[in-house]
Image (cartoon, rainbow, N blue to C red; front, side, top):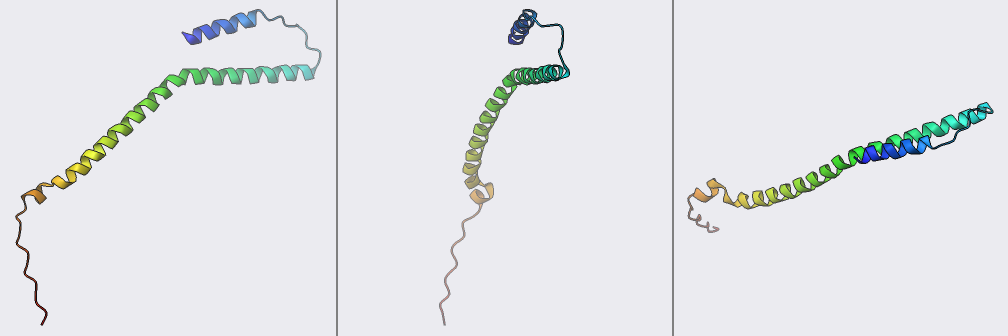
Length: 102
């Protein structure tokens, strides 16, 4: 919707311009061509920015949420390390008697 509004404003602006029909020299033609190419490049960059801004915002939000999820998973994993089944079910042995030095 916003792109359509921009296009309409751009078309209205271009249609209201009063341009002279003749070019007085090669220098003026080169200058006009350079200005036109620069303007088109900046307009293209602006349109590209506006088309991709939504995806970039969604990606940033998804990555932040994924980071939080990974943090929680890491905490859960650290708590589970002490609950190793082999450790819990192992029989407790009596400590070995100390040897006396001779």
